[in-house]
Length: 310
Image 1 (cartoon, one colour):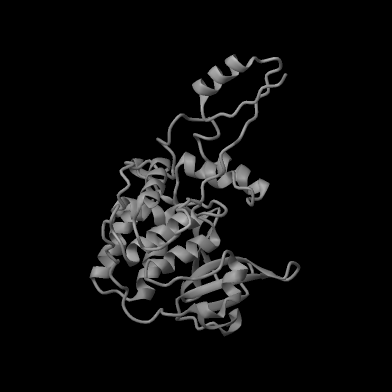
Image 2: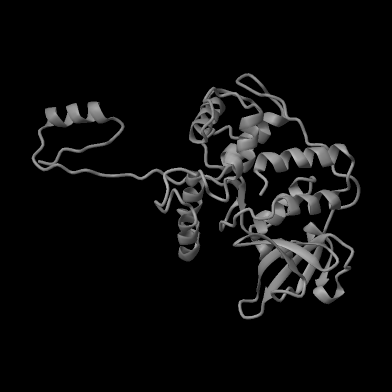
């Protein structure tokens, strides 16, 4: 199994060779075979902390949350580290996706952004596609997305990537191969912008307090999406004190040096980041506590808030 680092290097190499977008999508899908499925994931690193954060989200179905924990040897308590886990090849991380996250990330690598929070919304957004229809009409030579229609729930319950000749790769349990004749695939859709060679990756500049412009606005917008407070100015394209504070907070939460400077590693983390779970709030009531003692406790344990009960 390839690590995330190995796949990134391969993708860069394929782009330098001038491969087409379709070729890069297919080769990337094949390079990611065996990578694990986690519900709601869109290319996050497969670490115990990231798995736990994804599993603890309120929208995550209970069964999927259990699976996300159960399959991790650290979180299920069977081992104290990731060493020996099949999802930790040569002590390097892989990435986790769900079905739509996997498809989105494949196309994002060649500059195609597929909108939609799930298979159904992705399918319904006609701006994503140049062509779509029943699987019986799918051109077998086209690299495209394939969907499963759930006739009872009236929605698309699964999505994968057709790599040509009736063969496909999809993320279910883990990234695996399949055929259009398997699992009741019912529809296909060809993404817009699949023509031509894959673009070289964009090099974004390092930005810091005092910077301004489009890239600052990109970072600010992403921070706001991830739940960080930039004050009333919001994404104004000016890297001020509140933006610096938000960047430091984000870096600290993601294991980066909290220097407030957005360089390559912070850009990458922003792209992959998920909204942090809200901090737990506790109220402690201590009967018959004197004001002096209460004030001493508040001073010692600030920012906890305590009230005197007489």
